[in-house]
Length: 187
Image: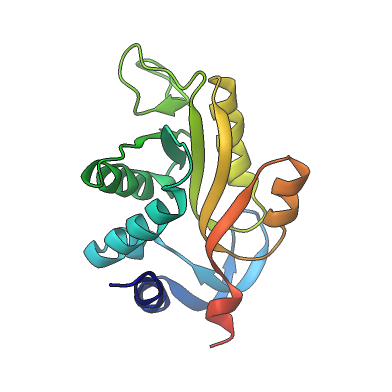
């Protein structure tokens, strides 16, 4: 399937499985009359494959060591990208950032790394399912930077176009999205 056909098919899946109308309170605290819940798309076999494919294609020419982001939205996405990158013979490892470190065990903020493995000096991409203001992704960025990593890109699947671009620019972080909310609202 061509990239444009994959993108069109994924948009159809998102529209069917993950987009809705109705009043909702977003993670940012804002109210909205539309929403995206990408988990049904990320956990659908075809949706997961297409998200991984399009994301991998976006990252392929970047020199990326790791991909990850804030739990819960980034977890299925990072795993799918890591798996596809292995199949493409260009492995990109995955991690996720806890919203709050567990109060038992290793008490880690960044999970998914083997004992002795570190993000220090590694080039990382922060992924997110849906971005509104950028606040959640910036939490992940801060935790990953504290681990010594370099953030090369913040990549969201859907940008709600409500301030994230400006927030990432102000923070000096490159930002891209696979889709804009307006692509679903203006159909």
